[in-house]
Image 1 (cartoon, rainbow, N blue to C red):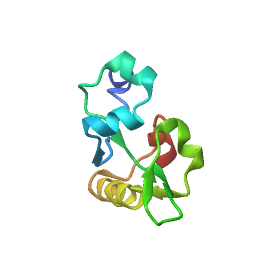
Image 2 (cartoon, rainbow, N blue to C red):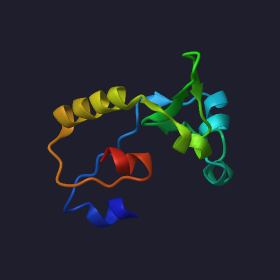
Image 3 (cartoon, rainbow, N blue to C red):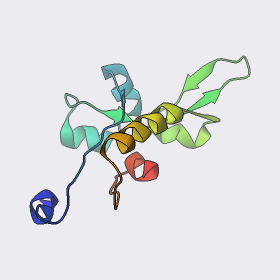
Length: 106
């Protein structure tokens, strides 16, 4: 693993989003391939999610495959505050490695 190879030259800090999904949200937003590979019992997190504000003002939560139809992003401000706290506590950092939304947040 990368941690073992970098042990003598780098300290790795692993960060999860503060937005943890419940089982209903995992069914709605979970990527089927990821869920098949890792199962539904792990904790899953999102950094932000796309939603659509309907004409009547209601917010519609969109499945992952429909995020391109979103009109608003929710959770981003909370996630940025979370990362700022981590940076304040553990930073500064020389580099960032991320996957999917984690890469976007980096």
